[in-house]
Amino acid sequence: MELPVQVLLALGTAAAFATSSVLVRFGVERSTPMAAMFATISVNVVVLWAISLALYDVTVDLWAWRYFILAGLFAPVIGRLCNYIGLERVGVNLTLPISNSNPLVSVVLAILLLGETLTRQGGVGALAAIAGGILLATAGRGDGSAVDVRYRDLLFPIAGAVIYGSVQLLRNVGMELVPEPAVGAAVNLTTSWLVAAAFFAVASNHRAALSIPFADLRYFVLAGIASSLGLICLYAALRSGTVVIVTPILNTTPLFALVFTFVFLREREPFTPQVISGTVLVVVGVGLLATST
Picture (tube, rainbow, N blue to C red):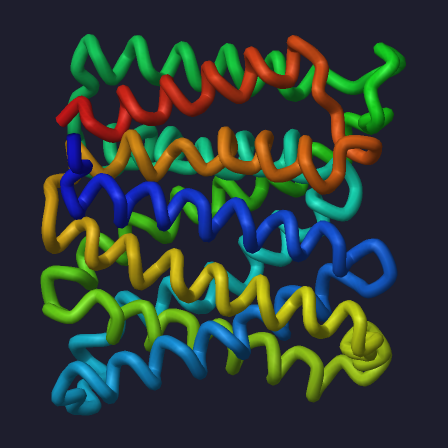
């Protein structure tokens, strides 16, 4: 039986994002999360603008772009940096499920700020995601796993989830003003790149963090290409399918990461039953939550 196009595209998105995280994990072993953040965002900007200019008649409209610009002040620049620090310190298998729980943050903010309500399915999903997060947060401490986790290091992927979940509200509003999602993403990433470039221009003591050995640079470039392809597949999937179909498949990114790290990083990543159970709970919970409306 042939899979629908939107399913294949959503699977491609999940696989691309997982691949990007694994590649960054390799690179930050000798380089820095700051270098990884700046390099991958630079690649994203080039790829997304190239596609946007090739496919659409782009007209500069800063007012219509304002929500993507505002979102870009925080994500991906700060959110991605937090996630990459998490990849460096606690690995892919703990960072990715926690950071991917960002829809939980979006739902909480929508309830508090916009007066939205949570359905029974959404409530079950939220509880499952929280339970999975607790399992992941208490995993890898003296249990014979590859990573001995310090609780404070888990604050970085948690911060990444909070940042991405918060700015998603801005992106949702921005999508109503910018009909081409790729253009909105390009604007968002360009803003983040400018924020990062301004930081390095002012904070001269941090410029050394941008020094990247060639062996690591290729990992970051490939990670940037992979995440760019993931974004393209995501937008194509949403255009050809529905959120109810695409979102649960997209949230399988941590499961792809488990497979990839088992193949390539088995000795450096935790694979305890607690980690696997926590990852599955987060994936299922976020899927239920995101499709509950």
